[in-house]
Image 1: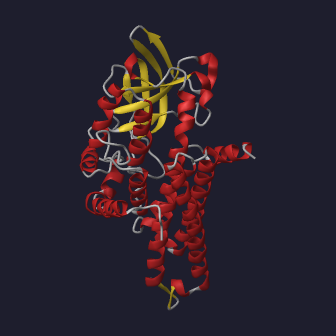
Image 2: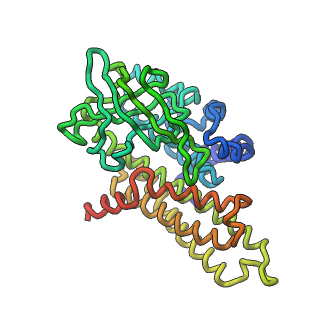
Length: 375
C-alpha cells in the first residue's frame, strides 16, 4: 500500500483515469499518425485541472507534487508517453513560479494552467546536449531588448508551444556560468519552428527544431538574473529527473499488467503461456524489480516534497528506473512472440517509446558520471 497519497490524491487519480480513458485513448492512434496532439486537448486538460496541478492558485490547480505525480503516472501507465503535459507542468511552469517576477507569473502561468498557452524548454542544440558550456545560442543586450540568435533541437512540445524558455549565452567567456534563461513567446519576428521530427517512438509527441534569427526579446522576458542560468538549471533538474523516473516506473508497471493478462489468455502447445516456467520467471523478476523500485521512488517523492532531494539521488532514480524499464519491456515483448512486434498490441509501441527516456533529462552515461563524481 503506497502511503504518499492522501484521499484527495486518490480522488484526483480517478478523475485523471477517466480523462485518459475518454479523451486520450480513443484518439491516440490518430495523433500518433499526425505526429502531434491537438491544442484542444490541452484546453480540456486545463479545464480538468490536469495542467499545473502542483502550482498554487491562480497559477495552477492549487495542488501539490502528489497531484503532479498522479498525472505523470497515469499517462505513463496508460502507455501514453507521447503526451507532453509533464514538461509543461512540471518543468516549464515551476521555472516561472520560482524565478519569475509577479508580472511574469501573472502573464503566463494562468494561461498555461488553462491550456491556452503550451510551454516548452529549449536547451539542446545540434552541437550541445548535456554539455551546457557548448551552447552557442547567443543573447546580446540592445537597449530594452536582447537580440537572440541560434538554433535548438529535440524540443518537446515545440510545434504547439506558445511559450519557450530558451537557454542562451549572455557571457560566452564564462562558458556554462554565462548562461541565462529567456521566456520567448510564439509569434516574435525571427522565431521559427521546424516541422515535427520523425522519431523512433513517441510519435504523438510534437518534437521539433526551433530557429532564432535575431529575435528581439523584450528585456522583461529575462527569467531570473542574467548569467545565473546554469545554477537555475541544476536546481530544477532534480525534479525533471524524478519525473522521468516516475514515468518509466509507471509505464513499465502498466505494461507488466498487460503482459500478465496476455500470458493468461494465450495458449502455446496446449498450455497457457503463463504456465511455462520461463514465462513465470520473467514476470516474477519484473514484479520483484518494480516493487523495489517503487519503494525507492516513493521515498524520492517524499524527499522532493520536503525540499531534501539530493541531485545525486535524483540521478540514481532516473538511471535505475529508465534502465530497468528498457530491460523489462524487452523481456515482456518476448512473451508476446511475433504479436509483440506488431501494432496490434501496445507492448511494441511501449518498447519503442521507452527508449528515449534513457536520453531525456541527461543520458544514462551522464547520470553515471554524476553519481561517480560523488563517490
